Structures are given as structure tokens and as C-alpha cells.
Image (cartoon, rainbow, N blue to C red; front, top):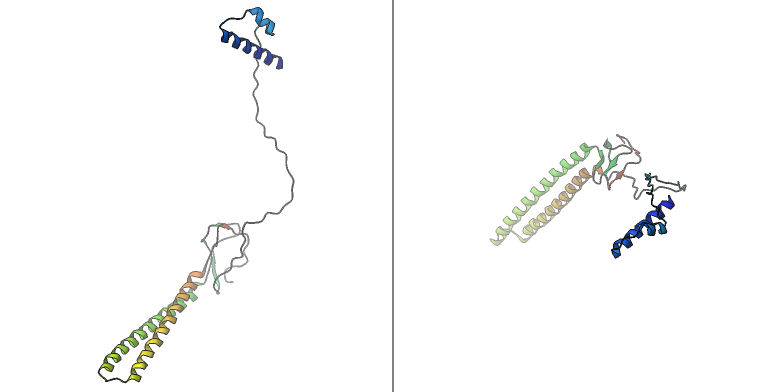
Length: 195
């Protein structure tokens, strides 16, 4: 095979020189280069692609990029679990939910408490406006006017507390469903419904 390649290379060189100077070589000149007058035998070979792999044996530990023990943000009984061990979850996907009824009752109670505080504040404000108008006509004492002013401030504070309590109850209701903090895989489950 190697001898055939040399002969083919020599023939190509001879043809190249012939083409460059415009003169043709004689058969005797070709024989002097090592190419005989007989045709060359050419054979083809198909190549097989083979992947050579050598195993590498090492010891190591695989650790996750992040690992979190998920716990509910609010207390109560777990009502429903949405995932199983091995499930893949996306960020924000619900994992489990606490019993909703307790949070809904508290929220309803605080909605009414906020409405009551709002009504008391509106009443106190209207009473103060009437007291100011009567004071201008000297039909109301300064002490009575101060009492009306204090009542407005007290009812306004109660209204603020009622609003804050209502917002907290709404947040607890929202937090009663625990969401995945990031994309990942559930690797273990330590609780069941009713826990």
C-alpha cells in the first residue's frame, strides 16, 4: 500500500511538471521516476468510526446546589399535600396547604372589626365637626371640644390597628399555602395530611 502511494505521488509530480513547462515527458522519463508502464492497482478501504473509552474510577460525593427544609409560614393542620418524593417543582409552585377554614374565620372577624373601627372614626369625626361649629357660636365649651378631638384620635388609632390586623390575617391566609422557594426536586417528605 505504501509503495502504491509513493508511485502515485511520483506520477502526480511528473504530471505537474509536464503541465507547468508545456513539454511532455517521454515514457522513458516516467520509468526513471519509478513508474512502470503497467497501470497501478488501486484499492479502497472503508473506515469504521469507533469510540475508544477508558473508564475512570474515582470516589466522590454529589451535593445539590441548594437544599432547604420547607416548613409552613403559619401554624395549623396540614390539609393537603400536592407533591411526592421525586417530583420536580418550579419556583412558586404550591407544595402543601394548611387548613383554610381557621384562617377564613379569622379574616372574616377582622373584616368586620375594621368596618366597626371605620364607622366609629367617621362618627367621631362628624361629632367633632359639629362641636367646632357650636364652639364658634359659644354653645360648646373648650373641654367638650377637647373631648371630641381626643375621641377622633382614639378611633383613628383603633381604625389603624384594625387595618393592620386585617392585613396580617390576609397574609396568614395567603401563607397557609406553602410555595416552592426555587426550582428543584422533592427529596424527602416528613409530614402527612393532618400533621
